[in-house]
Image 1 (cartoon, each protein chain N blue to C red):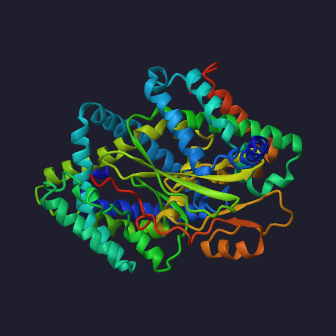
Image 2: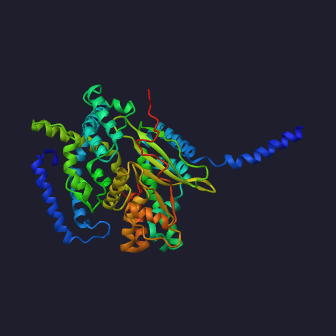
Image 3: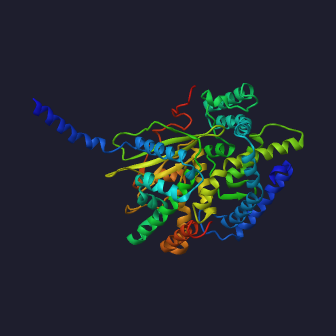
Length: 285
Length: 206
């Protein structure tokens, strides 16, 4: 369990995963050209699924039933608040100082008037929560996705995001708790809470497809793309009844080039500002 | 004078339907969402996941506003053009069943979240628009649910639903093309039908 591992052990685990990756690079027989590590990924996916089914999900279900709603809201806000300085730093690194200062203001407000972050008063005050991490920053800087990879315990990543993961893990939980049991409990609680928020989607995911691995992979990749573009990825809908369509290419730049060539109905992506900047009606009461 | 007024009224009523008949896309999404959630909120059976009742609700209120042909086409991708009209019809049918179940499942999860409708940004002449909504719940980040609609002769029809930035339609493309590569169009149809049979509450519980 990552919950109880020390950082050193986590590094060893990562090294192990890298070795498994290298090994599978030769051995894997991919069925999907966009997923060169599919052989290894599928094995790791079912391993993670087993861990989830036997340990994490039952614990999350218990937490979900036992903890009263205000407690769950407080827990979510508390960990969310701890991540805000890191989110702000990433916004800064991505050249969005406005968002960055907003995140740091959030942290100041919520840590003080929000009782150590238990209340998210900053959202009420019109400072929305952002979703940034170092993987997204690297993407904005032009680092490509790399292959899709399923990490042990952590789950789906692109190679770029996998490389950024150690940094993100230290960055978004800046509390240096020296008391090891306290630190581990905090980590366990955080994982449990996050998993509990996803319980509602379990059945939908289970029933929505005949290949859960591929569905999760494509969902993850689409969502990463959405986050990297701050909620405004270029949208394109092809008409496959049309005559000669070029092969839809993977990259964003390719998609833009395709738009010029083929019959794409582009919903003007420039018309809508970033999700955070769009005029969302915040209840101001 | 009376006749003139009457004929003017007649003229107006002849003009009006042309405009009034087509509900604008954002209004359509709002009306359907409000109506459906109102029913879910009041119905304990639906909240506890009674499949027959949920399906009936979805069939009656939601599905008429969806263009399943376009959805299937988008999910299948390039290979769509290789499919015969007969295969296309079976694909649409099987995919529709799968999507309806997904949607119905999601609906039974609805409790007290509030849904916010974001202002529509589209020109009156646009033939494809995206209606953006946000599901808000305390202590969690809002989740965006966006509906992409196209103008048809029968009014605006939804052909994509994007949840948290992920298109529930094109998300199937990877799985589908994989299936087509290994078993052809018929292989994909078979896989879809098998899955639907497995999940059919009538046969065996999944």
